[in-house]
Image (cartoon, rainbow, N blue to C red; front, side, top):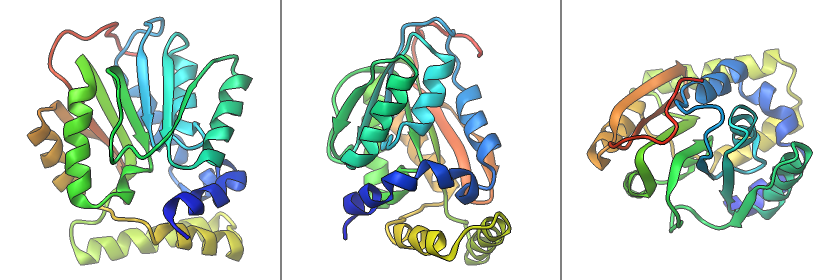
Length: 233
């Protein structure tokens, strides 16, 4: 089974387990939305990389109702969930089945990603951050809500132990935990500080980590220039 098959298989139950598998769900995604500095009514172009079921981009759409969302992902069954999600919101979403690690097209005010980029090898992450920067319009922003590796062996052990204790305390079934571990075989996490450096090297300004809870982090930056529809939500 490859990563595409793994996430297609998980599509049916994926959203239902998010609050269990992400112990800090509300703060994690809440921050990932609050840091977006655009006016609510701005007609923005937004790209969600590895957007899956549209969980994150759906939250963005809810606070930016005039945004045109594009969701790019490898897993067609996950993207079908995204289509249904946006239809339920009365919104039209662009769905693209593809591998963003290879290429993507267009120019965007906002590029987001949720729990996806950590599946890439480090060199792929660096190249992707370069491509994201070049794909942003002047003043555009990139927000990555993702998992990061502990910067030392002991910290990584602490991250893993805390996560396991948290999800077990939330009553996860053995079957669901086993499925999560199988998907985690595709993880290629990198420490936060490495990724901050890669973003800065790509040219991003105001690079920051706005939220971190063990391995769960929200970080990113913006492209220089005059932004379109800048405000604080």
